[in-house]
Length: 378
Ligand code: DP6
Image (cartoon, rainbow, N blue to C red; front, side):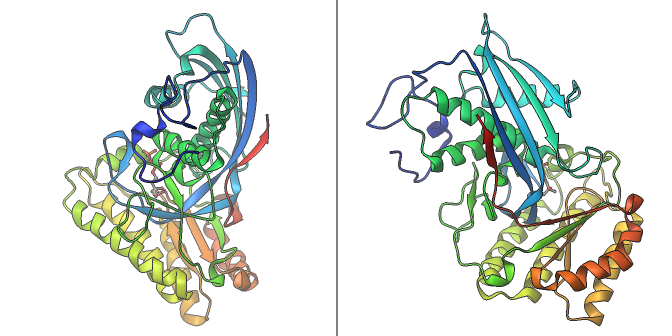
C-alpha cells in the first residue's frame, strides 16, 4: 500500500513500470468502453481562497464546509477511439449540448493529462446536471469539476491492476479537481475540509484538500446554510480573473497573512464551540474577500444593494436576539446564512419574514453541512 506522507505532484503520475511492491503502474487493464456516475457537492469557504500562483497553487490556506443539497451529478461515458492525438469529448447540461463549457474542460484535460495518460485514448460523453438552477448565481465549478474528477478517477481505478485505496483515490480526485477549479478540491469529502498548507495543520497541502483533522464541537454538527439568491445573473468578473488581480495587489501579502491567522484562530473556536468568535472570523473573511475586489486594479464590486440590506438585517437581528446567525459571501452577490441546527426554527422565521424580500423572485435554498461526493453507479 502507498504511504500517504508528504505528497508531491510526481506521486500522482502513474508509473509505466512497478517501482516498488504495491506501487501503482500504468494501466494493465485497458478497457474499451464504460461509464461512471458521481454526484459531488458544492462547498462554502469560511476562510477564503483568493489569489493563486502557477498551476492552481493557492496563495493562502482555506477551509470550508462541504454542502449537502447543492450538488452536481455527472455521468462520464467513455469509448476507445482510433487515434490518440487530441482530446475528444461532448458535454451535455440537463440533456442539452453545451459547447460554452468546452474551453474550460479542454483546459482541464490539458492540465491533468500528465496524471491521467489515458485521456487521449478515449472519446468522452459528459452528462451533467445540478440540483440548483443553472442561472442561480451559485457557482457550479466546485461541484462540477469535482464530479468530473471523480468519474475520471473511477476510470483510472478500473484500469489499474493494483488496487487503488480509497484514501489515495480521494486525494488524487481532489488533486485533479483543483486543476479544474481551485475550490473544487474541497468538495470530494466532508464535512470540513482544509486546502493549502498551514503550519498548525499536519498533512495540509497546497495540492489537494484534506479532512480537518482536529476536534470539532457538537455545536458545529449539522450546521445550516441557507443561501439567499440575491442576483442570479452571470457575474461581471469571474473568479479566475479576480484571483489574478491579487498579483501586485497593494494589500495581498497582508491578506494572505490574515487568512493564515484566521485559520489558526478557527482551530481553537472549533474545539471550544465558541460561536461568537466563529461569527467574527467568518464575517470578517467574507468582507475581506470583497474588500480585496474593491481595492484591486481595476476595482470591482460584486455585492448588490440587496446584499447590504441582508447583512444589515442580520446584524440587527443578532443585536435583538441571542441567535448565533452569521453570513458569508462567495465571489458574487448571494448571501450564505450560517447557523446552528438547534436555532433553525427561529432563524428560518426571520429569513422568511425579513430576508426573502431581498432575494430575486424570493428564491433561496436551504442547505447544511454534508459529507462529500457519492458514487451513484458504474
Ligand atoms: C471566492 O475556485 O472558483 O469562492 O480556481 O480560478 O476556478 P478558480 O477559482 P474558484 O475560486 C473560488 C473563490 C471563492 C472563495 C473560496 O471558495 O475559497
